[in-house]
Amino acid sequence: MPLIAAPVIAPPDTGEPPAGGGGGGGIILPDLGRAAVTYYDPVGGVWPLTTPSLGWKTLAEGVSGLGATAYELTTDPRARGGVTLRHAQAQARQIVWPLQVRGDSHMGFVTRWRQLASAFTRTLRDGPGVLEIARPDGSRRQISVLYQEGWEGRGAAGSGWIVDTAVMTLLCEDPYWVDPVPVVVHREQAAGSSFFTPYPTVSSSQVLGATTVTVPGDVTVWPTWTITGPASLITFTHQGTGEAFTLNPSAVGHGALLAGETVTVRTDPPRVRYQDGSPDGSNWIGALNWPSAALWGLAPGDNPVTFQLSGSGPGSAVDLSFYPRYETA
Image 1 (cartoon, rainbow, N blue to C red):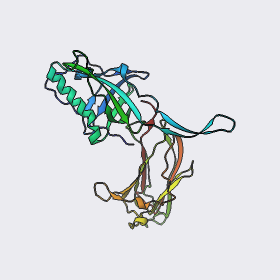
Image 2: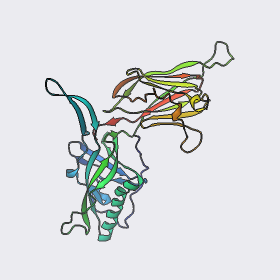
Image 3: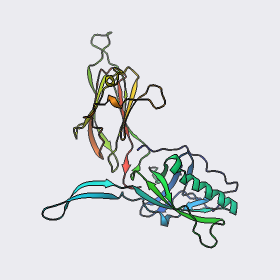
Image 4: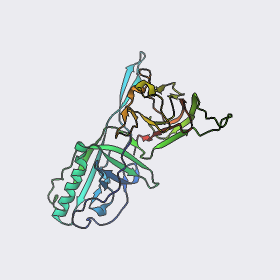
């Protein structure tokens, strides 16, 4: 699941100076230590949640849902007692996030309150937003969020005039945290010189990448592959599991990829696009060797993989990319 990293823009202007006083580039999150938190709404707005001088701040004591993913376990009884785990299914995550909003006047407060409410609730219309947690060492982890409930004031005497607190529940369809910086493996066939110079040569089959891909993180990742021609047949094999799939451009009536032509294969969800200049590319899902194609993932740790190209030549290349995934923030 690739996540957005929206360009940083200023929060909307309320017409008055920031409230609340004081700076601060982070809060102490329960069990996790100091962190700076930013929310990216689905239309590109950027909302720092740990900078009180902007007029709102996170109340750290109420934050929850940042720990390890919850699982539903399917088990079978053992004849001599106990059970055997058959399957573990990760469950959707719920994050509780309390946010206090202030203003130097009633209308200044109301403007901020409404703008923040819209930034979160619009995820139900415009698609998920992204919650990002940055550590002092510069590392970041992100998770896609949907507003579920909780943008309500305290309802106590005096609240709702120039200050109030909302305790939101955010739903995460994918419960895992993701590093927004992708890991990329690139393999390209260089132009070589033939023994029969100056006659050019094109190999009938070339093992372009036989390598060990190391996956950081806690969870299996599902890579994206980009193939650049020339190539007539491309096979991707996970040597550790034996799973493999083959891309055959001729299966969709195209013929071999020419130099510079590219195809992108996503493994989850399955998607194959030939970059023909249209905005989304042509659908080449039929170029895979169904039904035996296994669009395999990469487990945490070392993965021995091979990608083999037939009809390759100078400029033939394969790029593998993925985003490391984690159990916790």
